[in-house]
Length: 265
View 1 (tube, one colour):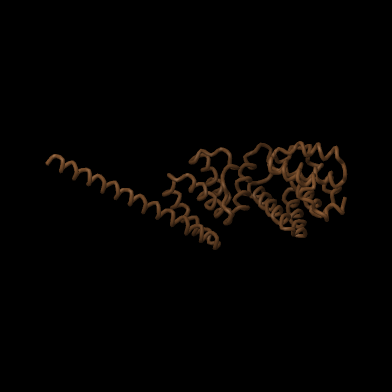
View 2 (view 1 turned 120 degrees about the vertical axis):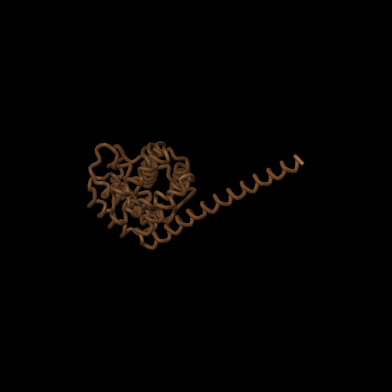
C-alpha cells in the first residue's frame, strides 16, 4: 500500500514537471513569436510598431542572452530609423548593463541588418572614445557609408564608390579611412602607383587595426606590380592574419595568376 502511494506521488510530480515544462515552452514560444513579428514589421519600415514588439520580447527573453543580443540590435536600429538617437543609445548600453558585454565587436550581426548593425555598434564605441569630434548621428552615418562603400567596391561598382568617397568627405574630410577606400579603388583600377600613394598617407598613422592586414596586403601587391621587391617583403611581413597572408602569398608567387594584371606590370 505504501509502495502504491509512493508511485502515485511520483506520477503526480512527473505530471507537474511536464506541465511546467509545457508552460515554459509556450511562454518562450510566445515571446519568440512576438520578436519574429517585430523583425518582420521592422523590415517593412514600421519602426514604431517594431519597437513595441521588441519591448515585449526583451522582457520575456532575458534568460536567453544569445537571442537578446539580436533583439537589442533591431530594437536600437528601429529608434535610429526614427531619428531617436538618445533612445537608441540607451538600448545599446544594455549590452554592458544587462549582458555584461564590454567589447561590442564581439556581437554577431545578422545578414539582413549587417551594415546598419555594424555601423551602429562601431558608432557607439567611437562616440565613447576620448577626443571624438563628431556627434553620435554623424558617426553612425560615416560608419554606414564606409561599409556600403566597401560592398560596392567588392561588387565592382566603381562610380558608386567615388560618390561614397565624396559623401564620406562631407561627413568627416579628415577621416583616414577615406584614403583607405581611395587606395583600394586605385588598386581595383590597376593604378598601383596611385594606390601606394593613397595608402602610404595612413600607413604610419594610428590607422584602424581591423583594416591593417588588408592595407598591407594591397601595398605588398601594388609594390609587386611596380617591381619593388624590398617593399613587397616589408609589407608582406606585416600581415598578421593567416588567411590574408596566404592569399597574398598565392598572388605574389603566381598561384592566383591574373593575366590582365601581369600586362600592367
